[in-house]
Image 1 (cartoon, rainbow, N blue to C red):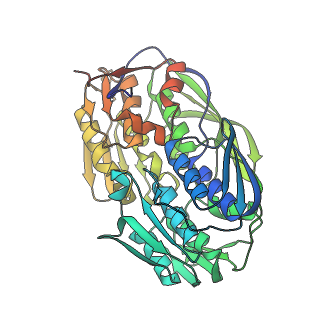
Image 2 (cartoon, rainbow, N blue to C red):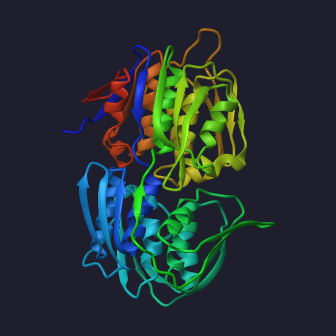
Image 3 (spheres, rainbow, N blue to C red):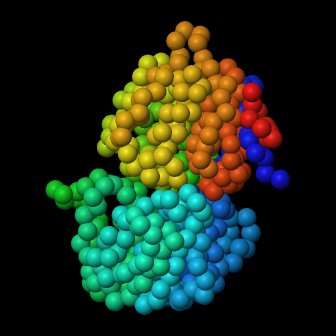
Length: 447
């Protein structure tokens, strides 16, 4: 039976070496491109969270051969494209999965119906539907571009699309649709976002041109290209590695090393910000694996200082702001996070939920539409109070962030709906306990 709540409380220092689960963004893309390719793709290090498993099931529904060979080791036999699925594609809670899959499916003359859990059905799809519609796809959906949604693709035309806001999901959906569009596709992003799709397309044999222009980063995918199956090694997810690293920074006496963490230059905003805050972090054994830079990262308990995070850093760390807010709670002074409105349309309104959770734990916070300000509790020997039961609205990052807070707070912190953590980090509790954390399953929230 899944616990109704998880409660984290102060214990001894955290010490040890762990390996972060496979990067979720790369795992989704490896499965989708493997299914679009011709031939066999072998994937090692695949994240086996619920979100990625939904994408694997979707690729099988669209006609690819998908087989699990062992822990994190999967085989995808692509047929060179998608065939019409016999049933509705249920993407669960996977926002990245559904948006990328819709882009890929739009390239084929077929109808596909997508749905998801209550959280995903409440999240807007218009930002992806707009460029797909300009390419020639049509759809029927609920008001506001929300799931369930039936998409019909095929006979797509070339598009040159400027992203109205930074979004690797929208960029990737357009590029995946462009694989089967007459003349391919171009995307102009005024602010660079994670580039895993461009890198992986090249790994599957596609030609992708990326150049910097006065208007920003310009990505060109010529049409008429066929993908070939390949081998993919998925590095450790920096968004998941952030939790044990920040836990070490805020828990006295701690030192934790995460092995094989992805250091893609468009994904290291959190490390840069923690460095600005005075974090004792070292990066060693830097190497290339499958076209991506990876390294071993060690964090030690540190006296952190509040900072102002530049808004242009947001695309490189948009999923890490909840755990950054926890680090900020233990810092001296004020941390201001600007340009983070994208957080309001994730699995939940993450700005509102972090503000509410931190306030319940005795932290001074202020939220605005695009900004979250955290007033650090570190004044002399004063610590974060904690002692709250936090409502997560089923958001895995909200849950994990507050559990990390509870490990260093004066009083325990509980979160509800902890089963959702498995969407991105199925081994989170076991890994943290292995480092020395005290996280207990409860039938009810801590008093």
